[in-house]
Image 1 (tube, rainbow, N blue to C red):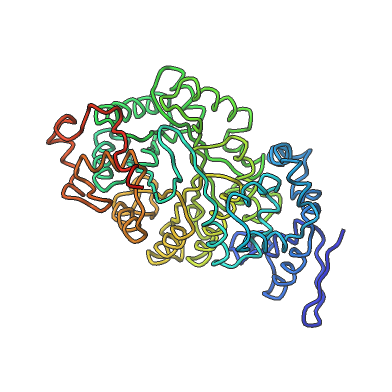
Image 2 (image 1 turned 60 degrees about the vertical axis):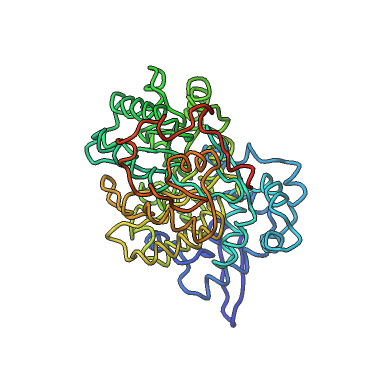
Length: 476
């Protein structure tokens, strides 16, 4: 089937839904390199006009990669709620956009409808939205998930403390953990990217992190971000950890290059539910980002935004605890500059939440990208307005192991104060006992990691309560 539109006397013809989706996207360097982007602003508008008139059933009938050719397509299709899809199958993509942005709709009702949306539908509606639309549409969607503690509660903003070290020096990692905690970071998770992906190193980091958390009774969860198979072997051998991690993508071929498929993720979910130290039920952590399929030459000619939406569709049936988007991490070959990174972050956050996922954002950039700290901070503030449930926490915002720029520990505290948001309740109560926070703002011991060296837990914490139960819950 061919799709046509005429604008200002110029006729445009698109040969497939896949082409319509690609040419309706905002400009992205990755799509341009693949030769699938719109050649002009006028062609982009023509594609959006066509897209806005497509019934949702048309997008379902035409996935960008065929069902029989791709596991991601099969996972998305097989997990769709048929009853809900039947309610909205005749809607156009434009009507779906109007419904999401309507004052008459609620976040709960939109999330219910989303169970009947394929990822191509969700990508399509996001392509029709401005930046402000994406912020407005996302902020009403409240998604929570629980491992040891719960992310996404109203009035909270959480942070993943990322204490990476270029040589995996455990004392250096723990020093960074102490610094991060002293700024109130770490309530989402303490997550370490190891330089060495081995079972021995993974188990060592799991054990040392867990021992520190137990000694200080820290109400959070931990993760070591080696390959999921490596983590699983460490857990099978008895290493303690709360959450298992894996990078995933929007095509089967890319996931294969990552060494993962749906069967392995199901096995991992079963293992961590049986042998993990967090009660759950949400115990998986996925990382995603626009452009990973193009970077591995496994994009199948599909635009990077639609593939990112498919990544969320692949994640949805696994009910993860965290999904972290790092679209700026690859570099200018996928997102050329700060403007493209900001747009991609807003798209990804909206699409992830519309899939019903607990979205964390890393509006990051590498030093060879045409972006700077102001771009990164602009993206961070917009995403905070949109309701991102967590960010990264990295000393000075500069990861010394992965060599990229992200949100720093000072940014974490600043964002909370700007928006009047708090850590998870259990974590806030724990920080209050340490003197790191006072009524939601930085307290007398903020920024002083030596409190973990100068004191023992019984000198600062009320150990009569298990796991520093929240005393601030009643205030809310």
